[in-house]
Every structure is written in C-alpha cells, then in structure tokens.
Length: 252
Ligand code: BTN
Image (cartoon, rainbow, N blue to C red; front, side, top):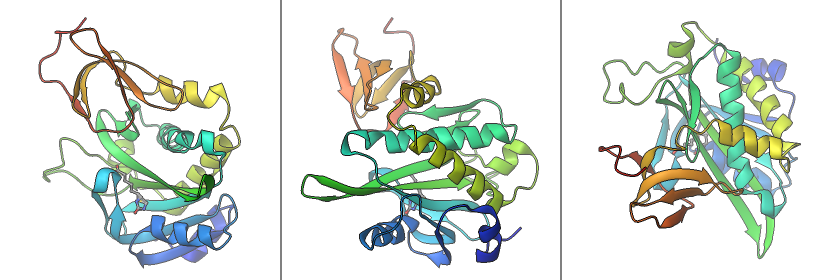
C-alpha cells in the first residue's frame, strides 16, 4: 500500500505533516518545533534525499521502501537521553508485534533483527540557553528494501524480509507512534530504562566503543556504556560506534 496523506489520516492519532519527498524529516520537525508544534506531532515522508544519520552519516530513504519519520517531544532536560531509548524500545516492540524474533538493540540505539540493522535513530534537540525547547526523535526503518546481493546484505535487513509478508507502512507508522507516546508518558520510569537495558545485545561482550577496547559491563541511567579494559580500568562512553572485537576471550 502506498503511503499517502489520506491513508495516514486513518492510522495516525497525532497531528502530522506528510511529504512525498523531503530533504530530512528531522529538519522539517525542527522547523515545526520552532513554530509551536504540539507534543507528539509527527513529520513523515515517503522519500528522503538528505536524511541524516548519526555521527554525520547520511541516511538514504528511496521512495516506497521505508519509514522515515520524526516525532516532536518536549521532555524535561534531564530526561533527554531517554528520548533515543524510548525510540529504540518502540521499534523493538513494533517488530515483535509483527512476529519478528531475535530483536535487540545494538548500543547506543540501532535496532537489529538476528544481528542485522533494521532501524536507526537520530534524536536532535533545540535549546534556548540552558532551556530545552524540545526534541525531535527521528526514526528510519527499513521496511521493503531488499538487501540481498547488495554490499549491506550481511549487516542490514528489512521488516518485510524478517516477517515474510507485505506490510502497510501507514499502519506501521500509526502503531509505532502509539508506542512512542506510550513510553513518552513514562519517560521518568524505571520501567522504560530497564526495558531498554534488557534489550541491549552488548552487555558482557568484548567491544570497541569509540576507541576503547574492553568488555561492556553495563549502561548508566543516561545511557552511557561502561567498558572495562584489559588493565581493569573502567571507561564511560557517551557516544561512539560499537565495533565487535575480532579476538574474543582476552578480558574475563
Ligand atoms: C543512524 O542509524 O545513523 C540514524 C539514522 C536516522 C535516520 C532517520 S530517518 C528519519 C529521520 N530524518 C533524518 O534525517 N534522520 C532520521
């Protein structure tokens, strides 16, 4: 089913702006945020030609293949790091509700199915001095992309490949938004953090987190990764790309 304003009107319970083609839904949402967007408002596009990923990477969204959406939220500043958490959690729940198995989060916030990335999350915020004006939770989900035979075949997957059936992106957008709003109302709770933490597939693994090689011990309440290196020194990684260590077993 094609994504359209009419279809989304039937599945979304929040104010939304739909674009057939846009640079980045995060940019449009940040702009809307500056012009008094209501909490929970959504920007969604069929195609994105200048989508942003984490750490300055681009995020391609060809037409007819994916979900590219951004939700406007206004958490208290101390809860900002939980916005990405709740996004990852909502995507996991969405995938599981479709029958997907082996759904997990690769820290900090890639959602994987059987170890392959199905979704990426980019949260951006605007500030007025010390005051947080709002946050934009940008989520990209591979829905229909067929990675077979591509250079990403070993690392990426899509919902339809995992489910083995055709999916309705408007319905997915509605379900996902409802899950985001559910967790946004519980942003201060242990339930959110515990649920997110329990889905991390990195704890206990040997990793290289932003240049620090060691064993991933735990995460802090604000989502940072605690890594202990081979000399027993503990490091806190707030941002970073997680690379598995080729040689396992060095650090116990
Ligand atoms: C990543 O894994 O690097 C994060 C990717 C985030 C992509 C989404 S698609 C919707 C929203 N708009 C953007 O420009 N980026 C996010």
